[in-house]
Amino acid sequence: CDPSPSGNQECGMTQRCFQQDGHGDATLHFQIIDLGRQYYIWISATGPKMSNLHLAIQTPVDKKPSVASVIPGTASGVGEALAQRLALKIKKPVLVSCNLPANAPMLQAIAERRLLTELANMEGHSTGDAAQ
Image (cartoon, rainbow, N blue to C red; front, side, top):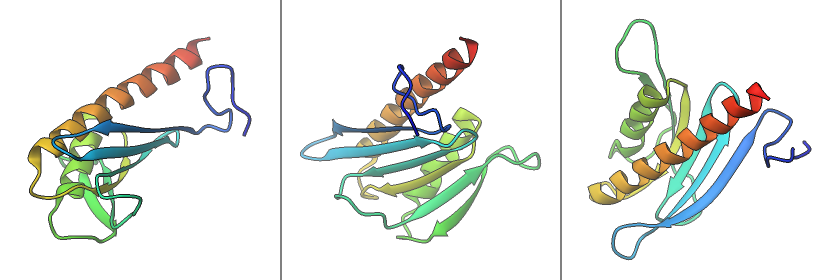
């Protein structure tokens, strides 16, 4: 893939990696890959590991997106719930690997807010690129 002048990849995928200070001593690490019709999202406050992967997709049958565990992880449900909320808000299927503590709701809220901001920016750039 060759990068275009806007920094997006001409092969149909765009990736963003970034960090944000979280609540207390935690640093949140993010990776978002736009795969065209779906997103892959990795978020961690515990270092570079992938301990779960959940797919959430909107179906015509239910109001809430369906969620499947592709790689089952801890039983906290943080990743499943995040994947479901993101798929509902951005109207695209999402694959989410979420390595956040279950007992840190403030950290989870900070992470979700930042993800939604970045996803909105990515959506804006992809629609803007298509209009040119």
